[in-house]
Image (cartoon, rainbow, N blue to C red; front, side, top):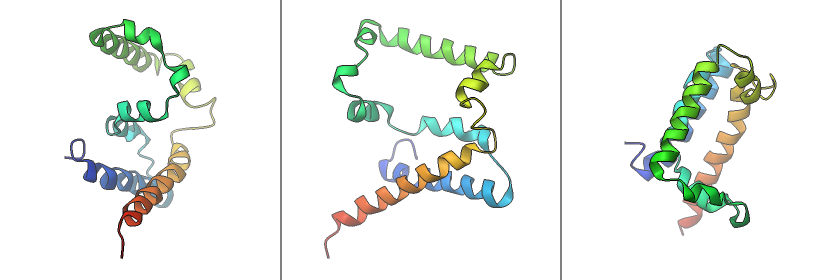
Amino acid sequence: MVLFYPLARRIILPLALLFHCFNTFFLGVPFAAILSIYLAFPDWQAIYQRYYPKRLRLKFLKQLSGGMLISLALILSTLVGLSWNTTPLPRTIFGLGGLVRYQTIWFVVFPIVLLWIFAALYRTFSRQKP
């Protein structure tokens, strides 16, 4: 339901992230392994079209077919997944050189989630007129 219903996505997704942040801070349960699941929820195409500057667009991607892009993404994600425990390089790159660890990722997520919730609340209540 959350994937296909925009109102639910705007409400449930940030609250679920906030729930996991509080579980980490107050109960000590980091849940960092599930963060990648949340990447399935945003509308990446809309984000790309809204924020990516026109002069920096990756024009060479238009030459590749959709199937080729999907295949490349699957191959890349498989390689990163397989190399995650065999070499320290992926952990160092995605962990920003040890700055972000399994437990500390929520300190990065928490302020982003708060801004997201406040922005959604502002947009919701600024549209309503008394």
